[in-house]
Length: 267
Image 1 (cartoon, rainbow, N blue to C red):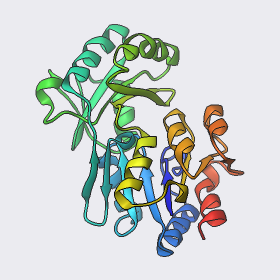
Image 2 (cartoon, helix red, strand yellow):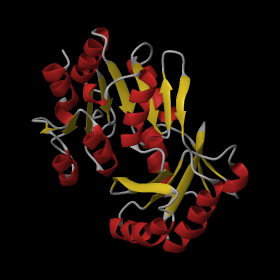
Image 3 (cartoon, helix red, strand yellow):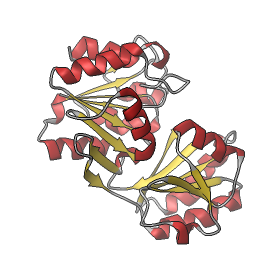
Image 4 (spheres, one colour):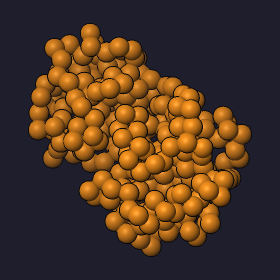
């Protein structure tokens, strides 16, 4: 069985820790032969910081980063899936977001790329434990077509929703744009997304979708929750995620919600 687990506000506490109880449950499930998948909007760099810190590497551990745009098997760091966005999309977002006074970013493998410094990008970089770099021209700084872009605002979610409706809609044929939390509007490949990550990894590993559990809390988790054999929303999830789920946990992300599901259904 595979457990697809969102990170922020699901597995991680509000201070970005994996609790001892959650960690013990994850190790117990992989010892029984189940697979654990970090399935997150975070970049691979950020996921690897956590994976190394908590020893979530090796046989049975997978990372679906960038909302499923990149999937790796941590046993040998083999890349199983790579679905990026085009330079044309990046160009549009970096041209349009500043007109709305919104922050915009993309990624190289080892850093977040922005064209202006801000309180927001300092907060984001600290939160995901990945350095950022301010460049004059992001198109020249990119080493390859990136796996996603983010448009963000620390306080004005309504403005982000209007941007999604007007600019995001024009890109909807070639990108999936979805909120990972009220601050972050994420633009990724139409062939990615967490639901597609579940489908793609099951296909690669030869696992039946009925033998999967997916647990999350936010808008970018809903498709994953819906496609899993068992979809789970944590107690602190948004209402739309709870409506999509088969089960809502009794505990929230601060009180070992992931361990609750593992102990109930996988051990």
